Length: 139
Image 1 (cartoon, rainbow, N blue to C red):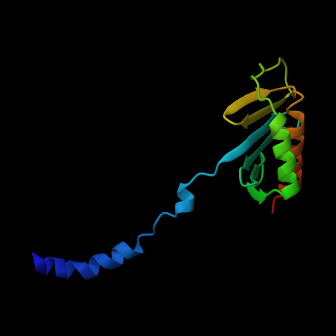
Image 2 (image 1 turned 45 degrees about the vertical axis):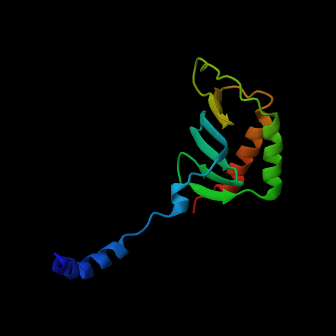
Image 3 (image 1 turned 60 degrees about the vertical axis):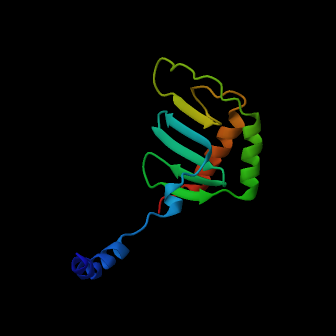
């Protein structure tokens, strides 16, 4: 049996070395600070902004690529300040008719969908919309 081990070892070692290891960073999910989506309306919005705890954002729209950027220190501080006052609350039933904007916010384990913006949502939505406008640009 030892002869087989000796004969197969040169064949197996390169095969084992060639197997790429899974990067540790890929296995760890980033923690989300706030997740925001704006959908609907006459223009057919489907904007999605995810802000991670490290201050970086992932932006996507109905058309075009997904973009990863990082907020400036000032932008991140403003957002965190606005999030302190955020009250996610309950979801709102869909209104009758068409052409409404649907806003969905998720923060600290709470998620709600609204069609009218509550007062505590307005500063957060304003900043996330501004980040979308500033940082999302198709190549």
